[in-house]
Image 1 (spheres, rainbow, N blue to C red):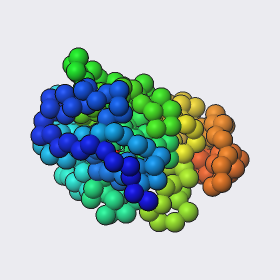
Image 2: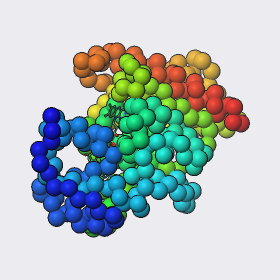
Image 3: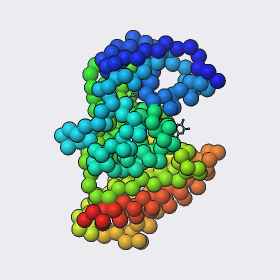
Image 4: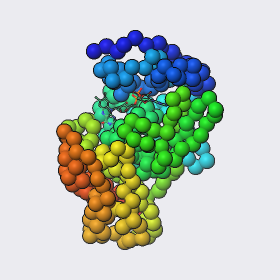
Length: 289
Ligand SMILES: Cc1cc2nc3c(=O)[nH]c(=O)nc-3n(C[C@H](O)[C@H](O)[C@H](O)COP(=O)(O)OP(=O)(O)OC[C@H]3O[C@@H](n4cnc5c(N)ncnc54)[C@H](O)[C@@H]3O)c2cc1C
């Protein structure tokens, strides 16, 4: 299939891109990032934007920097570049680990960090990472810039706080210590996971000072496993505590079924991958003490 005709623009600045988007906002003008989700949707005519505003020449959106103790990743940073970035490895190893599990390298060579988060596929890895890390998502429009907490950003499947005429410009990640883990169950290597778990555990001596855990694939948006976090926080975790945390996290879920898995199967996988994620994050946190 080929997409229906559309207008194409390739601005070189955010200001120019916003001007183009606002002019055509009523005619479904859309941002084009890596094109790895949008172009297939257009080819199947599931998306029919009248105007594609290609951000690939906007250099200001393709940088990684550290600012005020936050790792700041421009929305157009390609997944491959973030995956292999020394700054990301130090400040957000959870993101690097999750990136290695997104699709295959050719997809990650084009796909962008911001594109994945803005696309908000409930099965995607990066929205769950953003939620687990309490990311701040910077959204820019004609009226200026606002910062949206990851917890308020994802509104539903493929729906976010980014309004028509706006651009997700930056992903800001607070530095987190402790141990991390991104684990997922996918039927075949590189395909979308049925369930993913992102975990960060910080220890104070042997006690869990802070646990941040998010799941993908179990709800219309990524969700925090708050019940699991609660069981872990303040505990000196042993195998029974970890099992109880995974059980509590899974018990709070009510996913819908689809051709890939029944609701019960998704909950079972979530329980298992919560346990694996917590175990791995905890063992890394213990190694770092
Ligand atoms: C075979 C295949 C397998 C895949 N497997 C996985 C997988 O396992 N896990 C996974 O997470 N993804 C997977 N993907 C999707 C891939 O990761 C996409 O790259 C990603 O979801 C979208 O990023 P993109 O930069 O390509 O965005 P695009 O496809 O260009 O855009 C996606 C959507 O987001 C909007 N958008 C993009 N950037 C911005 C922005 N800065 N501001 C506002 N709106 C924006 C676009 O308008 C569009 O609606 C797969 C894709 C393919 C083709």
